[in-house]
Image (tube, rainbow, N blue to C red; front, side, top):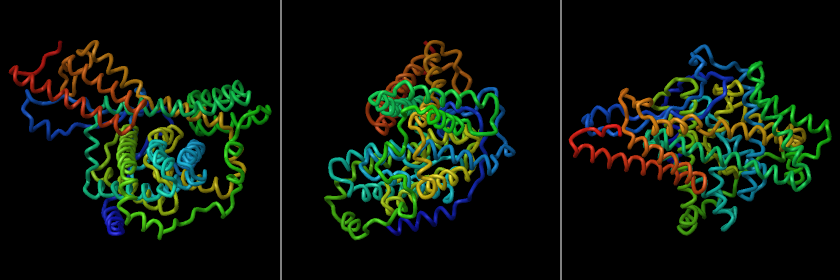
Length: 494
């Protein structure tokens, strides 16, 4: 295991650190850009080429100019954006800790470790890494049945598999995910994120404070949406969070706060809150036990797949926002950085994480996007725990829910989903990459792939939803391609 860890560091140091810029301040409607290999297109004869729509994530509005190298966020912008991201992750990190069954600080420190290691080890600039609900869901299935003592070996085994994925440079396999499958994944993720906030309002209703909670959440959401129309000098998310929190306090509304929702002493702060190293003797015995490895392997594999997909897609979010394609070694560096961060997090008693699409969207939306924005967010999370915990504990849960509803709304692939439907109704208005009309039958397959991915990602498993969508779309298109080839030509639009 140590050899793999050293090999990761060697590969990371050998990779060139490339600089990308982001165009902040604009609202991002999340989609992603995946390009089908042009080499494969050249190899395949014209009548056997399979049409798979590339994923194109539009992070910049149509009336906005592309980002340029002069659009790099300032240090202040990155700092403020990182602070906003940290606030948006606070309740999520605490909630993830509760799901796994560990102390709320475990989720916070997991985010700190992931947020610092990713940019320092050469991951894609602008990508936010931290505690992820998609990671803790399969992890909680393990810990709830067999206990939290299996959390560390599970995360460590998953991290090693992620490292092998990076060592063998398999990050390009993410290109198998088409626009429709990715849109389905984002739709499912956005809906999960949206409905995850329902618990805040259910608790408020039980306390007789549903109307105040909805009012402050709506106020926060409105500020986030409208403030950028007047000024982008300050992060709208941070302004909305502060205004909704302190207005609720000034009006003495009976709203739950982070402190009131956590165990006593969680937000007391001080050096006693710092993480400590796990019992290495126990961990060694678990890793040597075939029974223990067999026990953690299913959850570890699921975490590996989901973490890899979300991290690589988060990088593609930034690609589209900057309208710059990352260098070939950037996805590999991102995977190796994630693996290293998860290893360090697990050794410190955390449950790691991955690249976060919602927070990656929030980052440029708040004016950031540089490498320092990720470091700023991680440092802020650490300071929240050690120095400013009592103040942070007073943040309103309703205000945070307003922030997360905004992120959920921006995560859903509204435009791609609408275009998938329109392309079936009128294929001629939505030609393929070559400018030619794509057969309606193929457009139907694409739409079905989107629906299947959305359904399984939301109602079932995110990793299974992605795999099922890819297999269905490529399998069905392959069948139609062969039928078209046997018919002596390309399928015509119906």
